[in-house]
Length: 329
Image: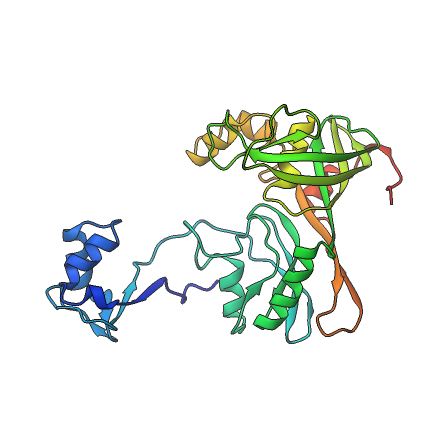
């Protein structure tokens, strides 16, 4: 792992901050510690002012560079077994495993794809597309800003073809073209949860609603009352696939937020998932996999297509299908 990477926050003092004592400034601006806690960290040498250990009573000047070095924090274990599918020096294509965050955030810093790539020698890292921590599959990582911009533009224009595999609860029909709206769920206890409503089912479209269109095609019915689907999202909205499937009545296997019961997420967040909860979820993570992406090479060399095989945890569930179905085009 990359334990040598440290959490460091650096800020340049503005002119209006001049004349303020250091401890007063950090206490007022960074309120996650009180004054005595900041004084203790300053005494430990965790705050540097212009590259030197800071003095709590030191008076700040405009343009001073203040650096805070966080205490080492034990991070949850993750799956570090990412695979490089393609690397031409300016663009990488990664097969991200499940249970690996992309960016440093919250409890995760060294245990992220970003940190792993840094440890592997990548000087610049620009994630073109992102996947949730639990979602596996194909990711584009640019090593230059101009390459990232060119690729992101294609995502914005909708010229990138994205294909996902997903396992859902229930016996899915041959295909569904889900056209509708995504908007914050007013009835959820979880602020970030999104609701899907098919076109024509809303009397008034919420002000924050965004249009979403997704194609779902049945690949197989799986023993135990599940279905394996191929997914083609035609728009790119937050939680689009998971929220849409929940709205259609086919929640994603293992999904704690958009699964068979929202209370799973609340208990998961509190660290209180029971053995019965885990049995009902079937998987430790949401069974969603970015299996393929196709886009125009930034170099102009033509169309590129990259694929990642179904990961082992999802593959084990589809090994004994009840009925095979031909994929729809």
